[in-house]
Length: 319
Image (cartoon, rainbow, N blue to C red; front, side, top):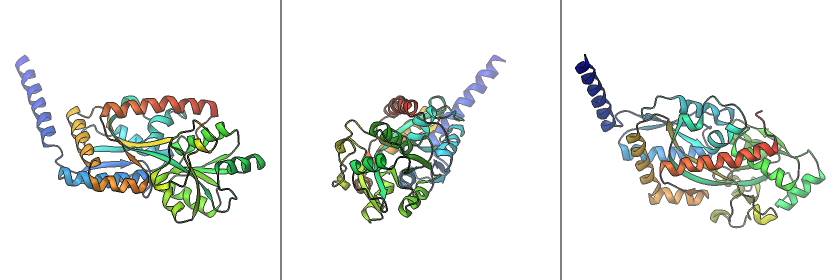
């Protein structure tokens, strides 16, 4: 009986090893927890194309927006940990949402970090109908028009939402949060003037600022962005210490074999180093990061602590 059990265990191990060695032998699904057209979707598709070429297997982007990106992130966490489902995870549902509401997944226990891909400042943009062209002007307008300003985000607990809350706290003003299911929907209402402003990822909102459909006021990084050198940072506009950076990166379900995690990490690091990929992100105003799973996991934990403090002080709750 003991020999039989040993033989069964050996066969199981050999089968697993063979499967890992052959990986990938079928298409890989890449879940994006936001709608098509936004920054996460753009990045997921750029890297899906590169990995399809590098790994000789199709990487298929699957958009699953909703609930502040919780729906798609839940799908990432609950997927079979075999390397055939990965996700483009973002700061909101992985680091921030845990402090806003009870989640149907545990980011620390059910998600395995693979690699951080982007580090993205938000851009503070206002409707052209709002008579504001600077951070000071916005604060003055808010103080003269208490409770009038509406600011958009992609949902409670999204980085854009918490950036707005931190801005309110540091400026000592009031604004009303209006959550949307997708950045494209939020942008439409800000452009139309139905909502007054938003802090949005620069690669999503930048094109509308450059085309004149929105008024750009400032960026939320600690230094100016090369593609928007005329825009000051919020910090240099009278709010020293203000910084809000969004990130995106690859995660897989916890329990995914470490050999597969290591393989995916190598493939994404190779893609991030490609000159034509780097060129695209210079245009976007986004920094490419790369690195190890451990480095990405550390960033996730660091931001969970930072934004938990903002959530507590602002009294943020799920809508």
